[in-house]
Amino acid sequence: AKLNTLAQSIGKLYFGSATDNPDLTNTSYVAIFDDNTTFGQTTPTNSMKWDATEPEQGVFTFEAGDVIANLANSNGQLLRGHNCVWHEQLPDWFTAARLWVTTQAKYSWDVVNEPLNDNGTFGSDVFFDTLGVSYIGIALNAARAADPNAKLYINDFNIEGPGVKATAMMDLVTSLQSQGIPIDGVGFQCHFIVGEVPEGFQQNLEAFTALGIEVAITELDVRMTLPATDELLEQQKQDYQIVISACAAVPKCVGVTLWDFTDKFSWVPGTFAGQGAACPWDENFIRKPAFDGIALGFGA
Ligand code: G3I
Image 1 (cartoon, rainbow, N blue to C red):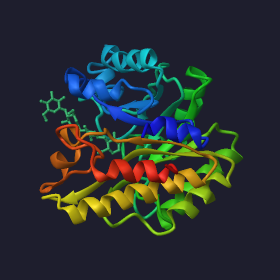
Image 2 (cartoon, helix red, strand yellow):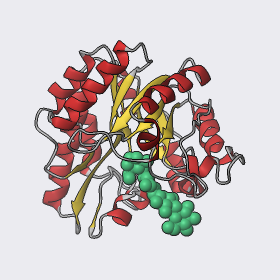
Image 3 (spheres, protein in one colour):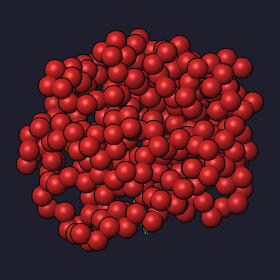
């Protein structure tokens, strides 16, 4: 099964995978990544973030991000820029809110990343504490000016199922729309735990698209407590299938991005001790049952 070909055959724009520059030194990895019948889109995991692109104030280094942008271009893959405004991975010199945006995206930008707390209030960070909620509109307007053709997104986690955080995100979108601020889509990160895909995920995607925006699954992975057993891998397959089927069923869910495709380069073990095996390919680049779950979700 060719996952991007399958996704496009049911009207999606893409199926893709995030990537990070060090991954690209592994030839087995690149052989899978470069095939645009498997991955029709990519998102740089780290190299377009603020700490990577302006490590010293006024000193800009776009080279690493450009490596991924250029590779996507030569592979015929869409690019999601990630990200402009986020309270993590700020450079050390950073003390006051100011705007940064670049113009490398070939489809979309995560302009604002993770603005909300789980209880639906705005997160306290240098942007919100300096500018109030206006920072979101300032960032979106600046992004539109800098890259008029890119779809502009707000991207977050724990908004996948209905609840206070999802409602707060919908209220934010409505408020931006009423002010004439450009907002094209909401990204659902989907960093899930095996067996815990939220109830009502598809209906929630539909509720967002009913606001007149598109949605995308931007950072999908499904982690488990190690070791990975056959039972856990089977549940993981079903979880991937549920997520992909939900996007498949919602016309304005434009595509799905894995937060990298192989366990070898997953962020999960470094962040959650004792957990991992979150990706559809294992650390030896062998397809896991989750791969079949994705294909089934796209209707294979
Ligand atoms: O590059 C340095 C390296 O020089 C150094 O030796 C090493 C030692 O710690 O750190 C390396 O930087 C790490 C970087 O990943 C590259 O591997 C950072 O410490 C580490 O914090 C950073 O983690 C990234 C994380 O965002 C930052 O919070 C993950 O790779 C990345 O997958 C993760 O992605 C986020 C999305 O952007 C937003 N949504 C959640 C998602 C998962 O947290």
